[in-house]
Length: 137
Image 1: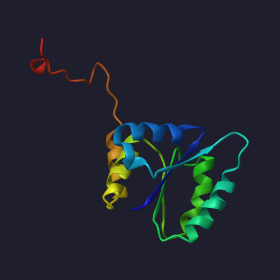
Image 2: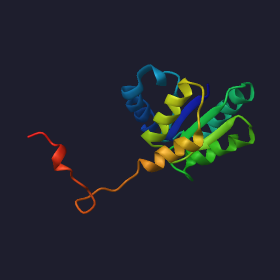
Image 3: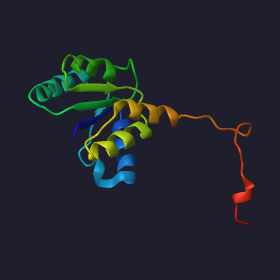
Image 4: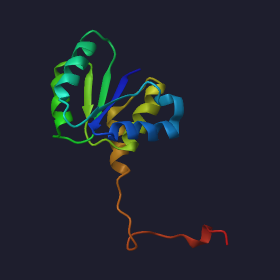
């Protein structure tokens, strides 16, 4: 199993974990979060994490809120380690896919990214199809 860490500006990562736990419960018990709060330096967290990862055989999958943000830019420093992967563009589909597959020990990061992308859609009155035949009146 991999160690999954959700990392974000503010409380997004904590909120994401709370929402994921509502759906999958204890499957998300080992997911960690990192929230960069005002006045904090993300490099402090990176240094702590670097020490931890360097002594671990575990795979670390870090899901960041936004590519190019200070959290992502700091965590990118960890990519010189073979057991680290970083995903940007955190959304619930990605996190759920990682958590569910992690419970069986077979994470597929590419599939998690695919699920995350497929979950992004625009619906409006011009492109929504309503099937009234299946409705109970």
